[in-house]
Image 1 (cartoon, rainbow, N blue to C red):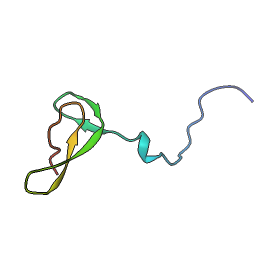
Image 2 (cartoon, rainbow, N blue to C red):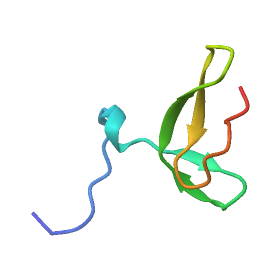
Image 3 (tube, rainbow, N blue to C red):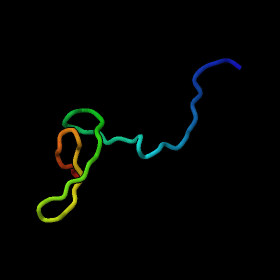
Length: 53
């Protein structure tokens, strides 16, 4: 057998998935914030801005 890169499909864990932040142009982590009216919204961790759904 010769060495090299072997491509194969495999599952990826949810902790290794990131969301793309169009403001920064990079992958970002997701956080949650409770607004004054009691609704829970997702936010980008780096910019603290709300993620549009």
